[in-house]
Length: 154
Image 1 (cartoon, rainbow, N blue to C red):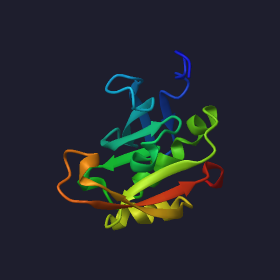
Image 2 (spheres, rainbow, N blue to C red):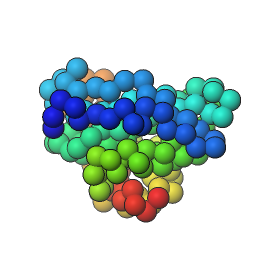
Image 3 (spheres, rainbow, N blue to C red):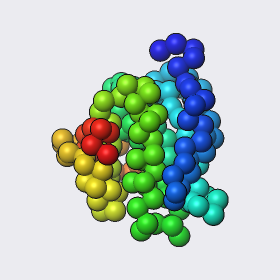
Image 4 (tube, one colour):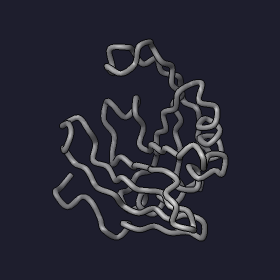
């Protein structure tokens, strides 16, 4: 991927209900293993910050552990499908980068996020055991559900 792999065209993505406002684009800043990614703040129609979402561009050996899209909604805004709506707002950016399949990786017992993956037409392609040795911040092995999504289904 070249130096100018990012586009400014999608620094602000809006719908009637939500806005995604770019916070930063990252390439090789933290680790050479890290895929380049866009990092957005999610704002509601009143410009309240309701969470964050990121889109990783491409695939590598770590995609199966982390997925292409990660989203965190603040506790007080959960239950409004904001993560699904924000994910769908990324569609033009996903298409710009010619990403034909998006991987979501979700903790097995995160019921709400697993429901969102299914609502996004995610196909459960497997379960993954993440070893303690993979990450220094987990104390026990975790199981994650791995979903494959075709953004054209949105």
